[in-house]
Length: 235
Image 1 (tube, rainbow, N blue to C red):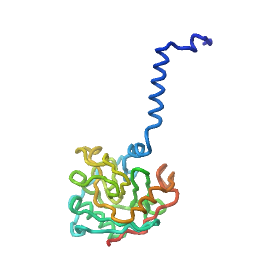
Image 2 (cartoon, rainbow, N blue to C red; image 1 turned 45 degrees about the vertical axis):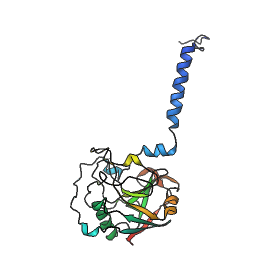
Image 3 (cartoon, rainbow, N blue to C red; image 1 turned 30 degrees about the vertical axis):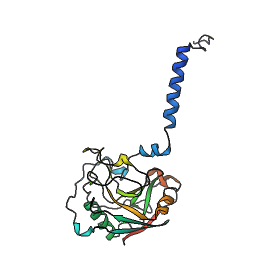
Image 4 (cartoon, rainbow, N blue to C red; image 1 turned 90 degrees about the vertical axis):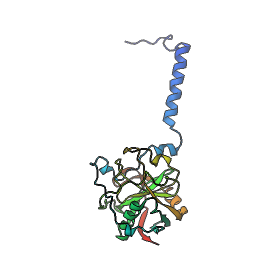
């Protein structure tokens, strides 16, 4: 049986210094910096249920007739309107895909289901009661030669597979350089930006400030009160 000893309770100077160093490292790792660094550790995932799916069929031949250079859309939310200028010069297939969903009324009565301050707001894939919407085939990821994920740009969400974006999108609320193309692998391909917010910045800021928690299939980061997208239309 272990017996208490005054000698055991007073380690030597070198041991005490080692303990102090280890304690400091523990405190630093536990604090982890600001909320932005925590947010940046979380990848943008289209649908948790699809994260382990097989490689998708990439649709590289979307009709370009629906993509018009300089097309603008209005995202009508329960917090107000967000106006977005689409960039079909840098992401023609992505814009065409998005507008096909817009024209079909796909985004009517959907939600922003994932909100992370200092990172982004994500929506377009779930109904108000968290039913996953049916989608078409995934599209080619145009992040390689596209724009940077800067604050107030809009980009496509995807699974860990590079070419897996379908209907979900997100609006960056910070300069998220780590989401840009960095290489040809799934983990480094990045996320394709296809436009930017031109009005309604206060609406984006209000949405990213809502209280979040567990809702629907999500254990974290879901608005406690639904942030509804009543529809998206061409302007």
